[in-house]
Structures are given as structure tokens and as C-alpha cells.
Image (cartoon, rainbow, N blue to C red; front, side, top):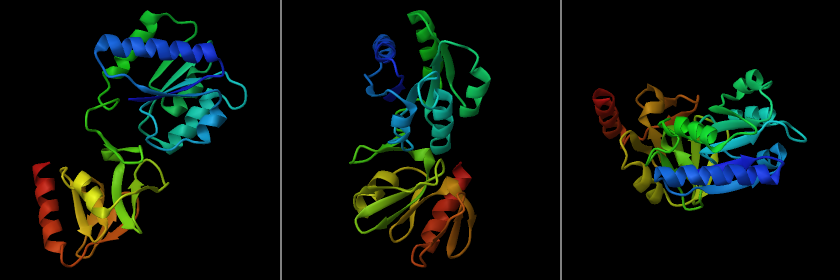
Length: 237
């Protein structure tokens, strides 16, 4: 699990980290990877979709607020869990726009933090084993977020449903096919292009219309194979 902590108070960041480590240890979960930021600006300067599984945001900070940061993050990433931490409950309605998973008041005790942890841990997509594709450069992408991939000049480009940003990583087409096409619902429809059957809006003889509005070609050589695989997948599902 990868966790981001955004707070302009060093001691408050340490407290969140300490309490989170205790929760993970007591629940028998693996330890987490942490990244700390002292402002919303410093987080947004480096943020990309899939960067964190869980994000703690202090609301009252210098510069842009945690609420403004959360709203900006939600435009980039639909899947990250956001927990707002603040000394006032006056911002609850405003933070709703960021689709927060929890709201934790300062000061809090460990019992309150643990209650928050248990609620998040019961949410299936916080860290479901095998729900993320881990890439050689350290980037992680939720399988459910991938619409399709294409390959050019030694780079695989990921077109995702949660963001208009196209993400890329240095690897071969054979490597990404080994990672994706071994899973139900992913198939190579033409040279260098892998699609997620769940993201197909319309299937014609030569073109797939995807949910993000893009169209991708189906090669004539693969047409029958892809059609049969798609029909079987839809039938089973």
C-alpha cells in the first residue's frame, strides 16, 4: 500500500504515520510506503493517477487548502482514498466535492484513528491483491482503470478512464502482453494495441469504439479471434 500524507505540521505527519503503522501491524497487513508533503502545492506538482492508494490531507494549511487539493486530485484520480484531517468540522460540506472516504478531527486518539482504518480496510478496492498492475519503473495502474494500451518506439502508452493524461512506461509489447493478456477481458486487437473488453462501447468489423471516446483498429488477421473472445467474455460475464 502506498500512502501520501499532506500536512504543514511535521509532528502531525509523524502521528499519522505512527498510527497507520500500528493499524497495519495489528491487522497483520504488510507495511506501507509513505511519501510526505508540507503543502498541497508540493503534492500537486508531482501527482499522477495511481500514485497512492490512500491520501491523508490536512484541510487548514498555508497556501491552497486541503479541500482545494483534494478536489484537484479527484479530477486526476478517481480511485485514491482521501481522508481529510482537520481541527474544525466546518469544512465537511465543502470536502464532499472531493468524494472523501473519511473525515478525522484533530485532536484524535488511536481508537478514533483505528475506527477510520477499519472502515477503509473493509472497502474492497483499498488494496485488493492483484488489483494493480505494477510496472518496471515503479508506476502502478489499476487494471480496472485501463481502457487500452498502445506501443510506439519501445514505450507502452496507457489510456485510462480516470484521467485524460496518457501515461507511458519503457517496456516491450511482448512484456505488456504477458502482463495483461493473461487476465480475463484483455486482448490484443491489432499490432501493438491491447484493449479491455469491459471498456468497449461498440464493436464493428474494423474498429472498436471505446468508453473514453477513442477508436482503435482491429486487424483483419485478428478479427475472428477477437470477436470470438469478446463474445465468450460477454457471455460468461
